[in-house]
Amino acid sequence: RPRKGTLGICVDLTRQMLAEERARDLVQEFTAKNEALDRFAAAASHDLRGPLVTLRSFVGSLRRDLASGRTDRLEGDLQRVAQAAEAMGSLLEGMTRLAQVGRRQARRERVDLGRVAREARDLLAASFAQTGAVLRVAPALPEVWGDPDALREVFLNLFDNALKYARPEEPPQIRVGALDLGGETVVEVEDRGIGLDPRQGE
Image (cartoon, rainbow, N blue to C red; front, side, top):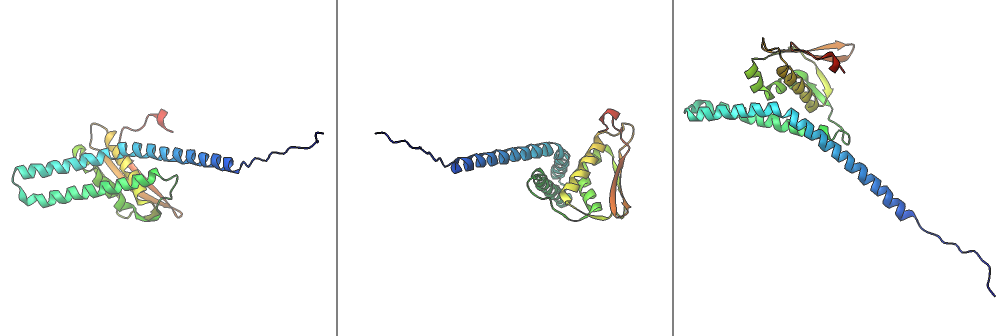
């Protein structure tokens, strides 16, 4: 005679839930890495153009001096090439860190704004020479807390734009200054360029 009863089936879903959670984590990690790669590619294609022109210019000067037998100038030429290459390496390192800013903290240290502004100018030395541009840095720019590579990149972009969008009838003039507004430092970068279309104000 058949017996009446209840059949119970227990399925352990722990492994499945863990696998789904791991899959979500992998998708998020992949998305973050892809976004970081996109940021790095965009920054590299834009920010390295000016420094590369400067490096090529220094190499060209070195070749001309070699061809003309000006051995007395070779040491200075090599030093400029080495400085430009070192500065570009530092810029690349900073761009890599900035591309990963969503996953890693940027550096925070005391930064000499005047030094960083001059380093950005040196990375664009060839463009400054070609355009006859003049950079005036206030003699007593303050030190601030920040990421030196990020600040150098900001100056680099502002100077590069000032050179690109200068008025054709006069050499570019760029001025860097700073104001202390009750303990907050406001940095000013001013140029005499053609300005922005009001529609691009945002």
